[in-house]
Structure formats: structure tokens, C-alpha cells
Amino acid sequence: MDKIPKVKRSAIMAAVRSKNTKLENGFWRDVKKLNPKGLARNVVDIFGCPDIVHKNKKLVVFIDSCFWHGCPKHLRMPVSNSSYWLKKIKGNRQRDREVSRRLKSNGWTVLRIWEHSLKKEITRKRIITYLQNSLKTRIGRRNIEKK
Ligand SMILES: [Zn+2]
Image (cartoon, rainbow, N blue to C red; front, side):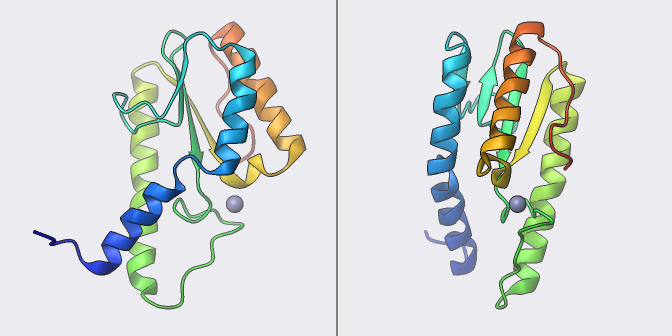
């Protein structure tokens, strides 16, 4: 029954735990204040399962964890099993690009933000303002913080 290798299973568990962290919950509370109608989170029926979605505005937001998505500033590669992690994180990044590409080609505005940008009040506010504008105008630019 249990055919997932131990290391992989713990990775999956960690990924599950990484959903809805405190940071994300706080961010979501701020986002909700903007325009509660039509906003949803962790939408599983949209390709890539975005963290935040506004279906009518065709806007999706992904909050990428610094570890799992290989943030150039904060990724500390684990010492043990490093080749496994490298492969895993590379795979995640590839999938991120594919998800963004596919959503964009279907007319979605895709916003990817690093988890770390939610930690700073100033970048967090910029993201909120950006979202607010995007929700008003529907279409916005893609990058807030260079990624
Ligand atoms: Zn980071």
C-alpha cells in the first residue's frame, strides 16, 4: 500500500503543511478586505491550484514558498539528500513556469509572489495595492517584485 519512499512522503507532508501558513492567512485577511465578492482561496479546479483566485476578473495569485520554489535569496539546500532536493525544487520551478504559461495563454492574469515578500510590511502593502488596482481594472502587469 505505502509505496511512496520515505523521503518523498515527508516532502509531501511538508508541502501540505506549507499550505495556509500564518503569513498566508494574514495576507488573505488583507486581501479579503479589498473586495470580498468573488475572491476565493486554494481553488483546486483551476490549473495549478492557485492560492488566491478571482474567477470573474480572471486573476490568480500564487504565493511561492522560498524553499519549495527555490527562492534565490533564501533557499538553503539541505545537506543530506541534496540531489533529491535539487531535483525536486527544479521540478517545482519547471511546473511553476508551465502553470503560469498555460494560465496566461488562457487569458488569466498571473501574479506570483515570493513568500518572503509577505514578511515585509512595505512589499506586502505594494502587493495589496497592486491587487486592488488589478481587481478594478482587471488587467495588470505581472511582476511586483522581480522574480
Ligand atoms: Zn525568499
